[in-house]
Length: 445
Ligand code: S3P
Image (cartoon, rainbow, N blue to C red; front, side, top):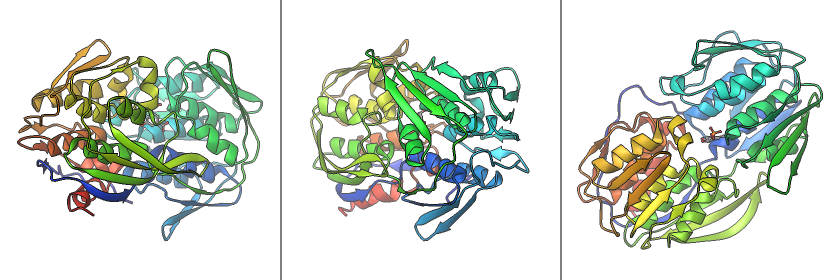
């Protein structure tokens, strides 16, 4: 597994020749976490192919091993022997979540309904991110959360078995909170209900069903989803393939739209509608994006995506689209910076709570590169360059945020003077092969 190095890795991204060729998307990060966790809870042996080999997924693997799951690499596959629902063991030391908010929040849920306690630690970025959104409902289920005021890592969760089943209406649109509660529900007697006024990525629901959990989803006339999970049922092992990550594919796709004369195909990309908002928005902006070979992989819709250089125009992105592309706003902002006209992206308060404050950091980074980007409340407003390269010439602080680093790297490819990223090490959390793949496309692979 690849881990982020400690020494800063400054990298300059120069104006790029056309990007041409075909690459495979790396495994989906969200789905990889869920595959390791559910396989680690099943009774028997699961085989996972296409798992993302990255720092964030390594954190989940390390924690599940520390709680008793046997997880081994076998060629390109991973083989997992689970402990059974209710069978997690007391970890001997603190669980290091590294940079991974998904690992921290999902595993806090898992521990909450087992008779074990675990201390969660993380890097500086993760230790600034809010955990009350998970800790609150888990405490209502009976878990004891030991944490300093402010509810950030480090914190300890003392689980309880049996926990109390909860009916919880999500106050914020968060797949991590939803998934934490469903995972807590697995070892809780009775029905745990999570009510989602705004639909978020449904990978947990799909995968829980595939592992044989007792799960049902009801949607009312207003689109409000209620997920009902009846706990204390065994999970059966699964052989599954992780689809490619649209959140990673987004970078070469947008780069191809922006760098003149480019045409790039990314194969095997997950296009779950709750993840693919970026493709819809880029299409509305005039992006030439073609989906081919649509199929099902691991219970998820997948396609090969071809993006060709396009003249983009500005757009207005409504707040209710935010959760369908929550991780793609940094790269969308780069695309909007080069479009013709005005782009407004609304209702982005949650971006302040990602690996960095992505609203503030991206507005500053784009401004440093000569783009016109400003924040109004929770909205981002960008006046595009009309297709002209951004001046660039700046060194950007990625703030240890992989998606800021990759977004501003793409900005460098379409700049006049290049853009330097202060440290590219963070890309190891989600897309370790980002730089070599861009270089391959520049060489016309
Ligand atoms: C994720 C959910 C999203 C997303 C994150 C991964 C998941 O976070 O930003 O990268 O795997 O469930 P929130 O739940 O905070 O929206």
